[in-house]
Amino acid sequence: MPMTRWFRRAAMLLLGALALSGCSFVGPQSVLDPTGPIAQAQLDLFMWSFWLSLIVLIVTFSVMALVLVRYRRRRANPDAIPSQFHGSTALEIGLTIVPVIIVILVAVPTVRTIFETEQRVTPTEEDLVVKVTGYQWWWKFEYPELGITTANELHIPTDRRVVLQLDSADVLHSFWVPRLAGKRDMIPNQDNQLWFVATEPGNYYGQCAELCLGAHAYMKFRVIATPQEEFDAWASTFDIEGAQLVQADPQVQQGYQLFAQKGCTTCHTIDGYRADTMVGTPEFPDLTNFGLRTTLAAAIADNNQENLEAWLRDPQVMKPGNYMPTLWQADDPNADEEIAAVAAYLLSLGTADDTEARAPMGGN
Image 1 (tube, rainbow, N blue to C red):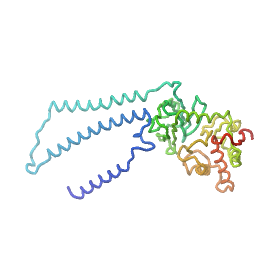
Image 2 (cartoon, rainbow, N blue to C red):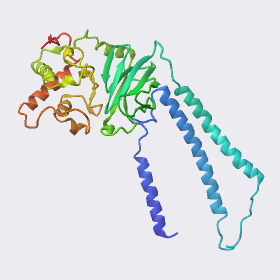
Image 3 (cartoon, helix red, strand yellow):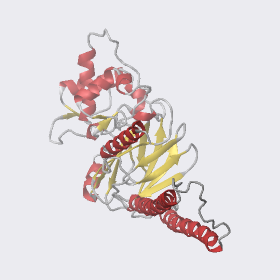
Image 4 (cartoon, rainbow, N blue to C red):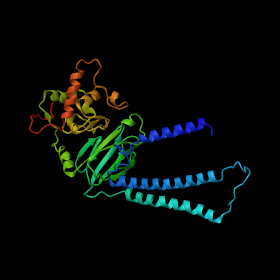
């Protein structure tokens, strides 16, 4: 073989080794780092299939290498023909039985895992039921038993089964949290279900796994798993008796007023905020207790004053293709002050200390 060909092959092997060296098997969305029984069962099935395939690969390439070496054309006798074994009964039986055994070794664990993890369950009193609706391009999470509606962050307790009722409000979406469970399609008017258990506290990254056009790549969310007592504390923050309160802070008060003046109430809901001015139920993210969220714009940025101001100033820069309008003109002399005020108000929702002076919501 010419040296140039050997050099090219060696270079390709080196590049392949370098590529593999950059891979990480543990990450925020790694299916190889499960933290629940569903994801663990799926990983076990994958690893079983992987090792079985590796054995088949080694045997196949070993036989191929043996044939290439042993029966290669020799210079001493270039016209020699190797011994033929066509019609060998034992070989044909072996080549029939071995593939059947391999198929059985793959099929039986696969079917068993499917029946253990994919079956539809009937929720019990111990389960947490959450209705998940996918929109272009964000997520709505409703807790029917708790009367809570939130967006883009799914809070769940650890070591408790969570049953998700999946639906779509527009096009096909797919719910996927790699470290907790596999993908499940969300189809309009079709009641799909997914269940899982988070065995460890933490933030689990999820996203839409079905191309839904536009800002599909930015349609992310977080699953925040905490011990039961911490989950109960989070849920109790929504028990505000129909009125979200606002701090007696001039900037926050200004933001409260601007929230209505800029037309935010046309699309977004905040419990207790001028409910009489809203028509129907807006199909846009519910902002109740927004200040408690760790992310914004469907989990693509940390929820802080700087990022929230950038989002309000020009949503298309942060998340191209979304439906959020630009509420301030570029030459508006009051834009910076008003944007900062609205951001301060939104970040105050659910975060104010109960001992601070507050001004009640509602009224003009």
